[in-house]
Length: 251
Image 1 (cartoon, rainbow, N blue to C red):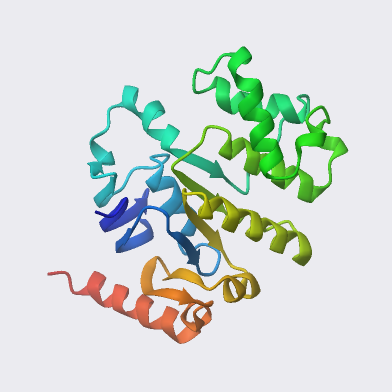
Image 2 (image 1 turned 180 degrees about the vertical axis):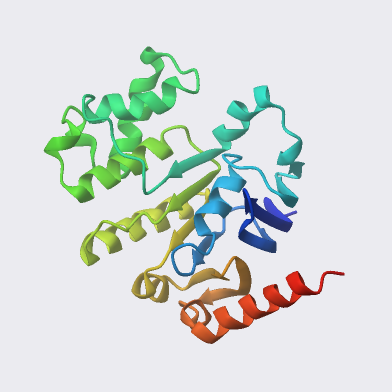
């Protein structure tokens, strides 16, 4: 059975901003998957819907055969422990050390301070930041802070790692280092889903690629590079024209 299923998922933000339209796909446990497409096509929305930071407008999402739309509010904190999340707008707290920033993730899951030290140092060590545990974020380079954020996502031993544009602020060498880290993490078991608009990195990695255009899933390819459909203005126009026709001629 797939670990993740999107079943005809649509997301509309009020009043009528259509972000995702009738999205269907499944992901097996342990896969590495890229979500690609231009900015604003719905990549981040898929990640937020999957972790129940947002709710679907139509359709269903299953994680480990559970319809996550039926989860109660009190169940969400436990459900979200399945995920490690790296988001472009997440930063380290500037008044906490690297160690303390990673500790926050464990404390939110109920770990005691005493039992946290080993996990924190293991997570920092796995991304090459063990020697910087007592540094403050402003003492780190951009690449080092990105590694700390990855360690913070990993410290709870998640089953699924969601990385939203993890290389957006990195130069090409640091971006490649980050992708190598994500690949190493995936080889150890967790499912990894990465949103990216980096043509070069996606082409090099040759993973499964889901391509979004104007909120529509237009291709799903294994061992693939960056799909030309993601940048095809004619594909955008085709989808927008079909959407307009449906709007003007509802069933």
